[in-house]
Image: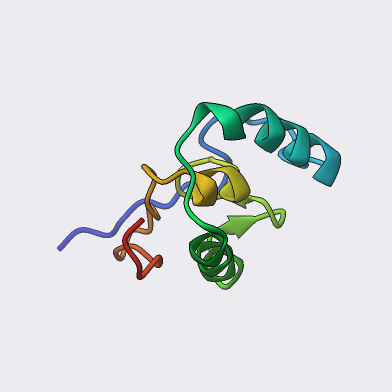
Length: 92
């Protein structure tokens, strides 16, 4: 079996991936009315799984997908992109 290549930078860009809480909250507030969201219990469980993942970058970015985990975790249609299977145990 071949080794899995794991990128060392964000997939979406090579610039600084740091975002402020204000920026993330603004993105969430703009997107929330436009997407189907999971309930608060599922959202918190997803965020906890992401917080414990070695692929979490800068506390907010998934190192596998390049997505902001607070946004991905909120979206009902999304799943954890872990190379070893989803870390999110529930179904949205």
